[in-house]
Image (tube, rainbow, N blue to C red; front, side):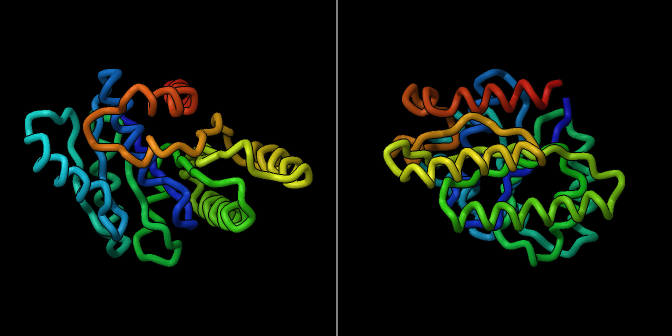
Length: 220
């Protein structure tokens, strides 16, 4: 199976890099062929893999991570078309800035876009801007049929007044008109202590509802 899944949002700090890595670990654990392309300028996933190699050796990894900084559109289009020939689920950690060159082919040729966000005004507003950007691209490119998956990340049920909680419910309802809402992922320190090998049981407990839902949907 070939699917290209881009983890993206223009708002930093929402957890797209963490969730991209954890979803790669999830797919590897259920014996799916996985390739991760790190297009984020910080190269966090690739650097974490290098640190894991130094710590654990290079015999413990079941998937590859390749750095590929966003470049001019022509090279990105060539990359995306090449990735569509690979028999694997390709995960791409995208940059967090919509003005970067090369983003249009990145999103145009993706099969799915996973958009983590937080129940916080700045994050929600940035997510709305990002969705508007994707919808404009879909109108411009009639062959662009990707689906957006929204993940409320770093969710803390202790935070939020009555009015805010009602606003978050309305936010999910609004996002459901543009894509699929995945289960919330709670704010847990264990999720920040991740590696590029596997998930521990505490992390699995938090992410499996969202990841199972995502995997089932991309297989439809």
